[in-house]
Length: 138
Image 1: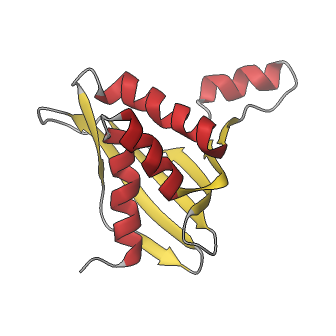
Image 2: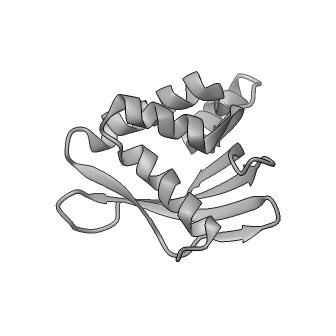
């Protein structure tokens, strides 16, 4: 039997690969709280450009509608064309109300890892994600 952190990590990664929009939306609602937020580390070029014009770059999706759009956009760009899949990388870990998981994006037909990320998930009392901090490591 999987520990709760690993079970959550598997459900989290699965939502990014889910082809059915209705199932994907339901999974978003089951994973994140109603006001849950996904914060993505902006690419360096975005950070640099923002600094040049005197603002801070932030990439944020808040609430089920925005989270569903975020997940769907990633699915449409990377998974739907049949080129890539996301999968968990290593073990997930939990500490108090936080879960740490790593993931990777790989060619659907096999091959070298193309991207690696880490997500730090802050959970609410009901076990759903309140804050999701995502960093692209490679």
